[in-house]
Length: 216
Image 1 (cartoon, rainbow, N blue to C red):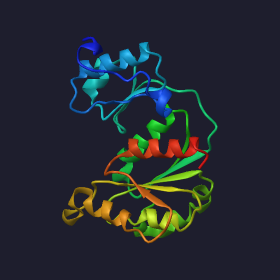
Image 2: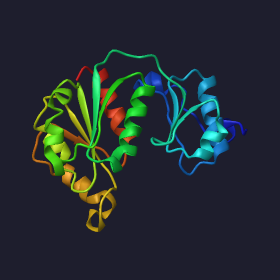
Image 3: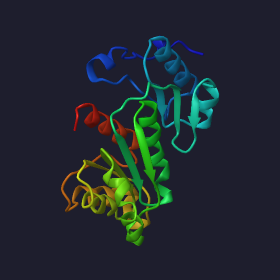
């Protein structure tokens, strides 16, 4: 395994400044480098220690870490649970689940309670309406959707908490690999929605955690 100090400058003081440690982005990095970065963060006392967008090869290089193949997350150390309330992660279709799982796995690594509501897209709007009580119990809702991405608007019309929209690159031709979903969420008519980048379940989880820590 290479020494992380030979190729990276890990930010071991980030948690002191921002409230969360540096997280490794695994995609495009050689598996041995990801393993070395995780080992360095563990040695430095970071909590949690995780890497996003990881492949089975990354997992094989870091066997001490737990690998969620759906979320593509490697978690080498979890933070202690914190009582900040529950984040509900709702996704429109099962094709959106990998992005939803990234948000769930990230929040779990940070000790935040989650509740997953899957396959409640607006093509059968009764499905999301049947989950109104679970949505209303959330401190924050993360809503993951592709296609035309109408689900965040529906959810924001049902709850009083902040709604974080995550557009996914799911959809046919003119979905433009998630651009239609992104634009749909950005132009939603319901107030109280913020939007992160396409397929960015990790980013949504970090926004949710910061809102919770701020008492929002």
